[in-house]
Length: 157
Image (cartoon, rainbow, N blue to C red):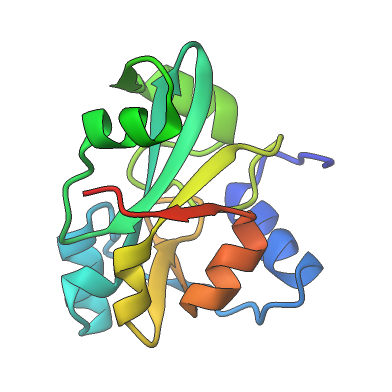
C-alpha cells in the first residue's frame, strides 16, 4: 500500500478499495475515547469499536473490541496458542499503523496487521470505529468490518 502520511485519507482509501461506503465524519471537539465517541454520536458505547494494538512477540496484533469491553489478553493468547500479549507503546502503535493511540482505525495502515474481531460486536446493527485521528470516526456493519480487516472472529473477553 502506498502511504502518504495522512491517516484519515488512508482509511478513506481502504474503505473505498473494499467497496465500503466512505462514512467518515469529523468531530472538531475530538473523540479520543469510546465514551467521547459514543456521546458525540449519540449511541451506545458498546457500538464503538476500539482498535487496540498489542505487541505479540515484536509483531503488531490488532484487536477490535467493543468500547464497553475489556480485552482478556490471557484468554486471547491461549486461544491463539501464542506467547504473552502486551499492550503496545504509543511509539510501537504509530510505527505499525501510522496512527496515534486514541485515533487508531481498523484499516488504513502502511502494512497488513494481523487482526482479531470480537464476536460480541455482532450484537450491533451499526458500529463506529476510529478513522485515523482523534477527530474522525466512520460507521460500518459487523460483516463489512470483518471483510475489510480480514479478521479472525473470536471472543476476546
